[in-house]
Image (tube, rainbow, N blue to C red; front, side):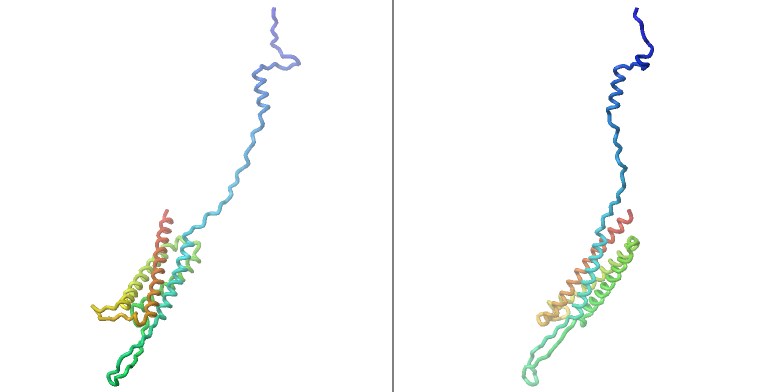
Length: 221
């Protein structure tokens, strides 16, 4: 008869099957899992917005352009000498005539308007720099003020351009005004230069209005 030994194995240790021994060896061979180091939240600086920087550049440009336009228009003068035959003596005589920008109401309006815009540009730039913490609050007042400057510049540029065209080509049909730019070319050149500078300043304020509207739209979301 075959005897069955269900007791403990040799040396008092229980016997193990082949599958159990394989599992033990495999578990011992596996290296311990490496734990990843804790992730640290490194702060990344927010990108600098281009809108405030562009606003500074446009306002500084408007200050320079309107100030130079005011000076050029305010100092525009011309002198012309006319030769004619004196009917009393029969000899040639000369008459010196002068013209200046302040003789025209449209040019005076141009000077005053550009002075106001230049002053507003300085004040708005100072307020924009000082109100870094409350820029969103100042967007609406700045937009309204910038739009008012656009209207003021467009109106004074239109009035000055109309008079400049009359000086260049005359107006014989309605007022019988003769052109004078052929005689005082330097005066007309200074007037035209001032108008061009003021027009560029008005375009700068148009861009400022667009930037203000974009800022208001962004702040509402």
